[in-house]
Image (cartoon, rainbow, N blue to C red; front, side):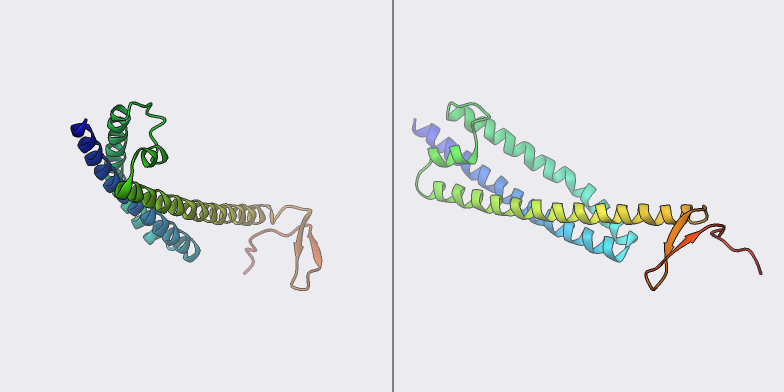
Length: 173
C-alpha cells in the first residue's frame, strides 16, 4: 500500500508539471490571439504569416504534453480504481490531502481562470474576423454592383442617388 501511495504522489507531481505546461500554453494562446487581432487591424500580412508559422511549429510540442497528461490520467485512474472519464482534477483533489490537494486545487483554479480568458479572447477574435469578412463582402458587392442600373448610393449629405447608367470605370481621357 505504501508503494502505491508513493507511486500516486509521483504521478501527481508529473501531472502538476503537465498542468503548468498547459497553463503556459493557454497564456501563449492568449498572447497569440492579441497579436492576431492587432495584425488584422493593422493589415500586416507579413507578421500574420510569421505568427502562423510559429503556431504550426509549436503545435507538436503541445501535442506531446497532451499525450503525457492523458497517459498520467490513465495510470492514476488505474491506481485509484476508477474510470478514465471520472479521472478529473476534482476527483484527484478529492482523493488527496494536505499540500498535494492544495497544489491541485491551485492549478485547477488557475486553469479555469485562463480558459475563461481564452474563451473571451476567442470570441473577440471571432467577432473581429466576422466583421472583417462582412465588410469585405459589402465592399466587393458595392464594387461589382456599382455599374448596374438601379443601384442606390449615398452622398456626403446622406441623401440617396440612384445610379442608372454609370459605369464603374470611366475610360475618357
